[in-house]
Image (cartoon, rainbow, N blue to C red; front, side, top):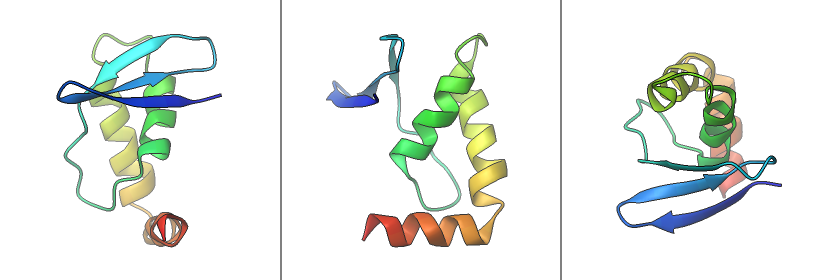
Length: 77
């Protein structure tokens, strides 16, 4: 279960293991999907700079795939 809340100037993500992660909304080059970004964030938690890791993965796998961006845009409507 993924739970997100707005924090002061940032976001809070609580993953399935109840790990609470505070992060700032990333500046990315395509449509931003919070759920997709938090999925990448969850895969990067073991790294010291998990936000940069998640942003890089998002750019590669979401922004680099025009069909994926289109799917996320449609999903948000």
